[in-house]
Length: 376
Image (cartoon, rainbow, N blue to C red; front, side, top):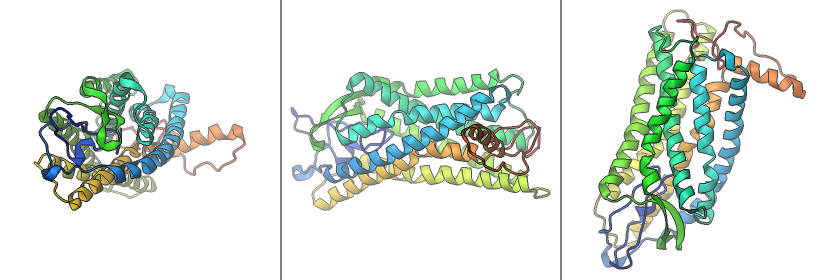
């Protein structure tokens, strides 16, 4: 995939002589294809030379860093969760599934990096499998973040336990339902992803979705805007703003102040990573659903700029899976204590965090005790 993880399909119909706009092969998460009725005035076709050059440098570098950092960070979280598996609470279980989704998503990055540098060389089967795997874990990661925020909201604001800490299978079953729902969302990728040669990209073979109509393409994009950003963003804003209001009441102890900072970091990180991409994508959605006549070089330059913007913002968005371990784990006092316990046999002598709470709570931070559950 070019210019991002999921992208649009651009095809040239040699028999009919029709061609497609420069946005026909955006590398975005929305996997759409254009119908075969777009033509340019004066036969002008905007190639993707400059955006391809940008992609071939930017994407491999960023994906390589993301792969290493993400695997190390999420791997450490999984190791600690495994060592403390008998004492996991609800939030810990959601974080476990979040880390699994992030790791599986990161494992698809080498395929997209190779495609950008060369072309898709892995065949149709791996095209479908890798594309669907990315889609499943992308949505699963977003939904797990929403589940974490909802669980914390109910625990802290309403002192309500959705799941029993003594019966963790209930939480695992909820996570399983999320995985199954994400699998359903990936069905179009299993059906429509295929490999094609793109004449505007130096006849390179691309792994792209070939939707049967514009309505399929538009529906895919709208579904992402709704489920991949708008709905999770609203859930997080509502839950964490309610938690902030609750924590600000009464005395402002050190633990409460630290919890408030963590909440703000969670929300800010989510919107910093995902808002630019979604705004850029909305602009592209509007533009690609209009009948465009390209008659001068300026139009092609605008399209190239949009292609590059989509690549940059989508890559920044997907790096969020590397930030998750830091925000949801490394900021926690108990997590840092368990990490130090693991490092001491290797010769590391670091000072343990002061004021470590002793009671059983989440591995990921100090507790703000409102309902005998951890806030973070």
